[in-house]
Length: 200
Image (tube, rainbow, N blue to C red; front, side):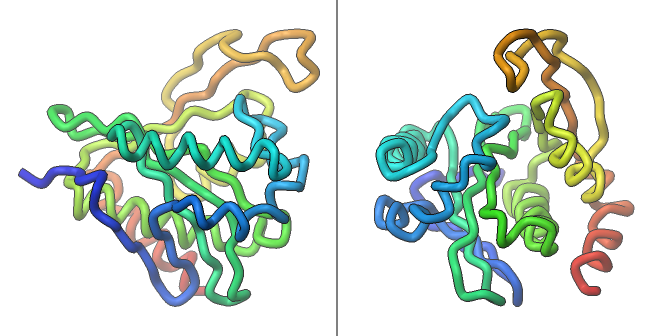
């Protein structure tokens, strides 16, 4: 049975995107992007500015060493620039399940199709290399943009954790929306459909 080796340097790439292991050296590469306050609106973490970004990346790198998550830094080949981060986490060896999230891109890379390329590479990796059966997602109830983006790559809404999070204004509560994509869905339709979307 294939295992997820957190010590291995996995590289996922196509003609548009390259995802590689996050390293401490990437702090410099991501500093200007992290200054964009809108990135952090729906996150529990805050990586805005060098003072927050440094411990944020240190924690992500350490979590990889502990086998808790695998953070990827995203490089946009079209612009020859680093674009953001994404992570696989909560890998369950017995159940063959994993979660995907903590994803953010600078505003120059949003709405460019980069996210679809990254999702294709991550889905392909999880289902075809790791032999996962399921990828899960959790999205802040007010984050309409992310919910639409996940729906556009084939993810299905499957549940709601009611009043799980604070609203952005901090004055009231909102839901955590649960979504997923299954291996059989990827094999039957989503891989082909997503491949067409990133081709054009």
